Image (cartoon, rainbow, N blue to C red; front, side, top):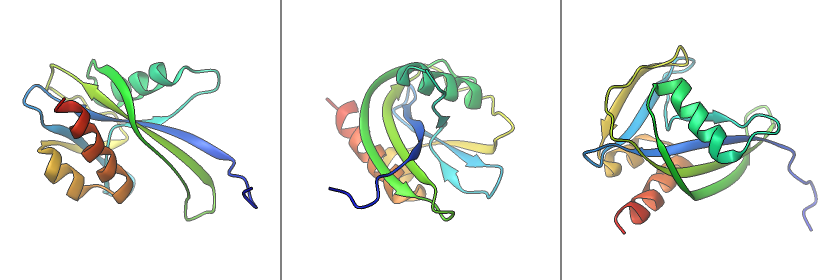
Length: 134
């Protein structure tokens, strides 16, 4: 049994493949770091609806949310619990309309996206690519 159970905020993100099989990454306004689009799950919100809503709010893109490809828990620098779930997503669109939360975006090869992102998000990209190639 775990000595200290994790009480966590749930974060949902999409590994979003565009029509050329590139992956979308977005640059955070707060610290300039790169991440996959997504955000926090609302109370009483279905997970699929939540990841769709977050991606739509942050990018303006209409997406097809597929299956979860990776899940991980951690504690942030403030010792707050986090639980992240990453979904394989598709879109036929490439025109991104960023929210105020991000300052830039880039469609890039899955390999380059995985290198640019954190270890957990890079792992999600690699797992989504395996599913995408099937």
